[in-house]
Image 1 (cartoon, helix red, strand yellow):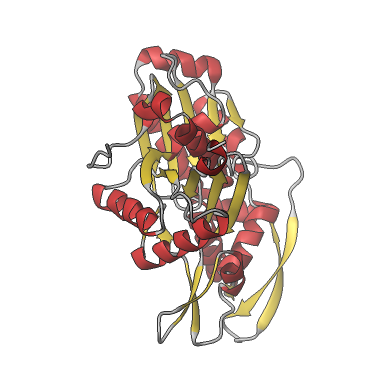
Image 2 (image 1 turned 90 degrees about the vertical axis):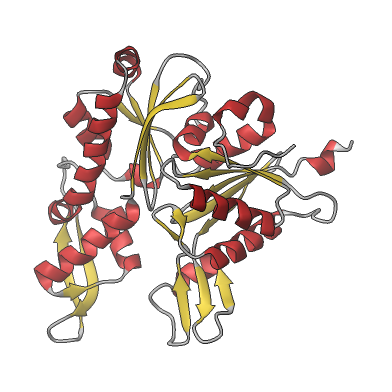
Length: 343
């Protein structure tokens, strides 16, 4: 009977683009953009999450929509704390009884200082025990890969701020590469391409829309087109353009190439025994930006390895984090050391 109140363990994916929270026994309760809208003069928080994202690029002078996570890590400590507090409170019905425990997925390339910031934010947001796990490991567990076995699995997790590549075996990452290139960089490439080629200025949300609608990393059987509205930099007035997926593929080539290069480097560093496993099982892709059309095909072409994008790539880091907190003793070997041990 007690367990009814006790099971408020949380699995959190504190992402650059979105923050997701799974709650023990209740599933995915939070999936909101990692955006906070603040009042410029007073620095007071006006909105968080979905509401705040709607304000990105559209705010009146005195309100600013900020993304407190940059490249997968905390850029604005105070705002992340506000955001976590708000989202964790939203989740907790019985917050008077027990403070929850949480496992939080973080980039594998995170520094000690950044780790501290995540732990402190979560603790100030009311979490009793905080554990950190590298995102590729958490994703692997969320997909149901047998991470404790000696055979190797290669996981590529491409989020908004980072692309992380890890070969996972025996509860650890044998080699990991973390590059701070993800969906955001792709959006920025689209913005600068349209600016250079057409003198057309578009905002982040529009760039993201273009990426989702016509973006690709490999030639498509049928190339796509779409209309884009933005501001003409020369005339200073709004204008509309038709652009094709071929052009956007050119625009995305730089961030995509960086990710592919990292994959190749990770493969070069992989011990030969594990390379054999990867040949058999292939590379597994997850994360929101893994959904870019043809990215799997492009990696397949460049590495000659089978590549699979898993179902529900957006949620598996948070799902894995929840699995870990629910079986903490079993998964303890996969957790990151945070410098202080809880007894």
